[in-house]
View 1 (cartoon, rainbow, N blue to C red):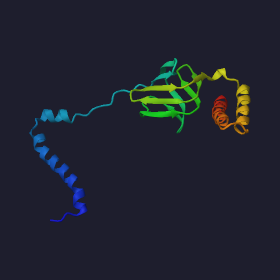
View 2 (view 1 turned 90 degrees about the vertical axis):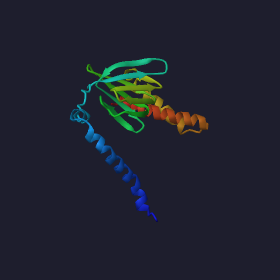
View 3 (view 1 turned 120 degrees about the horizontal axis):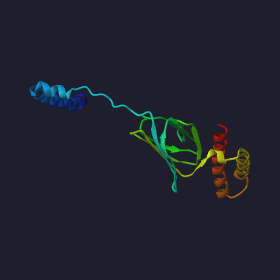
View 4 (view 1 turned 180 degrees about the horizontal axis):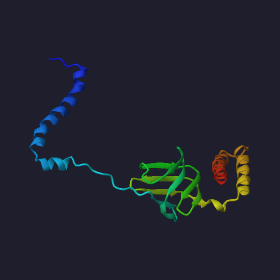
Length: 180
């Protein structure tokens, strides 16, 4: 007997249907009470509208507490994270980290790291470096950016140029964060 491709593809579906039909008499044999317990409607539990945030650096914990929202600069783009956010892991780009609390907004400049959204309303941010945004002077950042751009476009060694290009990226992100 020859089998064609269509019949081979249908075999798993037929096996599944046969298994379901074989299980049906067992379901019919259960008492009415057992059957209603198996098909009882369930309700979702109440979800908190707060997010548990842990902002940690390799050498210290900067922030731990309940927040309303966290805005991060991810490599995939800026994003806001609220309670009940889908679990995910995001790589952080140099940029602004905003923590929205009941009492106001705290801002840090983060040089990079990872943000992990857990399924139970927890957010862990592991950053390489993070500094309070108020500690930066816009004039000093502008000056450092100009110097880094000069070195990056100069005739120095390849290593000096590569370091200067990284500095340009970070200072540009810092300048953007200060203007928000």
